[in-house]
Every structure is written in C-alpha cells, then in structure tokens.
Amino acid sequence: MRSIWNGAISFGLVSIPIKLVNATENHSISFRQFHIADGGRIRYRKVCELDEQEVSSAEIGKGYEEADGSIIPITDADLAALPLPTAKTIEIVAFVPATTIDPLQMDTAYYLSASGVPAAKPYVLLREALKRSEKVAVAKFALRGRERLGMLRVVGDVIAMHGLLWPDEIRAPEGVAPDTEVTVRDAELDMADALMDTLGSVDIDSLHDDYREAVEELIAAKAEGEPVPEREPAAGGGKVLDLMAALENSVRAAKEARGEGGEGGEVAEVTHLKPTEKPAKKAAAKKTTEKTATASTAGTKATGKKGAAKKTSASKDDAKTGTGKRAAKKTDTAAAKKSASGKRASA
Image (tube, rainbow, N blue to C red; front, side):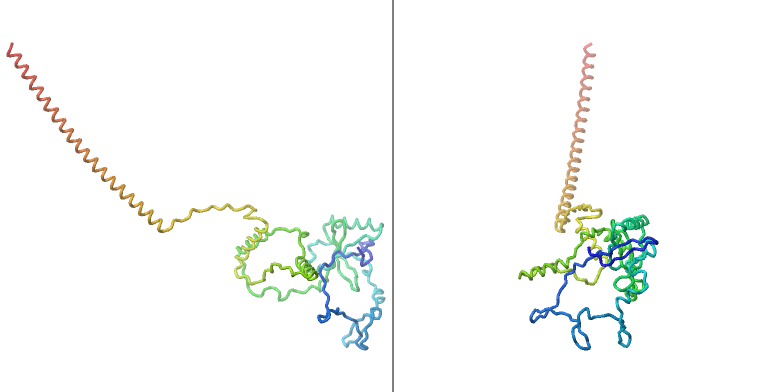
C-alpha cells in the first residue's frame, strides 16, 4: 500500500519512524455528468475571474481571504517553516481507556507501518504496551495543512490510528430530541428487549452493500441492452400506529428469518381442539337424551308394576298352599283319632 505521509511516533524519548497508510477505501460507484443532447462530458475548468482565462495548476496559489475580499497569499514554504512539532511527528500526549473517546469524534482511519528495520523493535514495544494496558493513545499530528487529533490502537499485529475531530467541532444536539412528553411502558421495553435478543449479534463481514449491487446490475443490463432487473421495493417508512403490534411483528419476523419457531429456537407444540358441535346437533342430541330418559323412566315404572303383581300372585299361592297344608293336617288327625277309637272297641 502506498504511504501518504512519512514521519515518526514520539513516545516519550522514544522515536519510531513510521509511514501512514490509508486503512479504508471507497467502493461507491461514481457517475459523470454529460450533455443529454449530444452525450458530451461536462467538465469544470479553473478560470480567472479577471481575464476569464483558464489557468493550470502550476499557476494557482492559495491564500486567506480577508473580510474586504482581499487575499493574503500563503505558500507551502510558509507552512513548513512554522515551529510546529507535529509537522512530521505523531506526538502521543496521553494513554486513556477507549471508552473515554466519543465515537462522534471518529474520523478517517490509517495504518501505521514501521519504516525500516531499526523501527521494528520500538514499534512492537509500543504495540505490546497498548495491548497489555488495554488503553489507547491520544496523539496530535499535522496532515494536509492542519493539526489534528488521533487515537492509536492495536488491530491484530498493527498499530492503527483514527483521526479525531477536535471537541469544538462536535455540534451540540440542540432541537434534535423529541420535544413532546412521551411515556414508555414496561411491556414495550420488554418487547424491545425481546426483539434485540432475537436479532442477536451479527458477523460484520457478512454484511454487504445491497444498493451498490443493484446499481451494478442496472449498469450491466443497460450496457447489454437488456431489460432493467426488477427488485422487490423497499418497505416504506410509514407511521407507527400500534407500537406493541409493530414490536411483536418484528420479533416474529426476526425469529422466522433465523429459522426459529418459538422461544429458545424450539417450535411450539400446538394442541388441536375438537370442533364445537353446531346448535342443531346439540338440540337433536338433547332431544334424544330426553327420549332415552323418558323411556328409561317408563321401563322402570313397568318393571315396578310387574314386580308388584308377581309379588301379589306369589303371596296368594303361598296363602293357598298354607291353607291346604292345614286342611290336610286336620284330616290326618281326625283319621288317626278314629282309628284309635276302633281299636279300643275291638278290645
């Protein structure tokens, strides 16, 4: 990678020669302006407003404009002669916890490369010291005509530096927060927590630029004279009418996207209920039950009557049997007496 700045890291009395390399690159698709009538490119030329003549880069200087419009020329030599220690040095001023750096201050990121073999030992020393302390270094450095703040941290085996905005370059968020009184219920917070837990973590490397891919497909189709590929339109940012419903739907959609059917990734067991009988069927069943009960009652009564009649008949038979037995007994007694009288008369 090509370096954009050469200098040194000042670490107390230790000086580490380094090269500054851009850590990021822009993959955005660039468009050109053209004349619709004939397809000619639209270009910007630098023209002097006094003689209306185009001038080259070598003829262009820079300067500071006064309130009255006059220009005070400032040359590169003037800037290089300034007694600024950070002109060629990244001067470390403190070591602080990373949490003390406001992410709003983060700017362009760079890699710091050790310049030459002698720089390897102090470079590794600083890297390992940052690792063990679990802190970041706050530094000052000058780049492209201005002094800046920087934050040094370890990325793998490399020291990286993030340019930081000065504190007075961070705007106060005045008039940004909602100016109306809003009450958030615990149930809504619980549902928001559930949504956060369901979405979980993400592998940053798996994310990609969908918009750029769509633009590339569009350009390729137009270049080949083919129809423009259709994509599903993005969801609009409509008003949230029911916050709880929106949260619940979001949790459900997130679980479906992750292949989950219920809490903890388990599919909920569904118990199917028996279908409810229709009113007509209920009435028929009730009528049948009533008929059965009536018939049962009638049968019980008839059985009772038959039982009573049978009991009465049995009683009569028993009575007849008893009378017969008594009459027979009397007859036998009379015969015995008569026989005895006959025997005595014969004697």
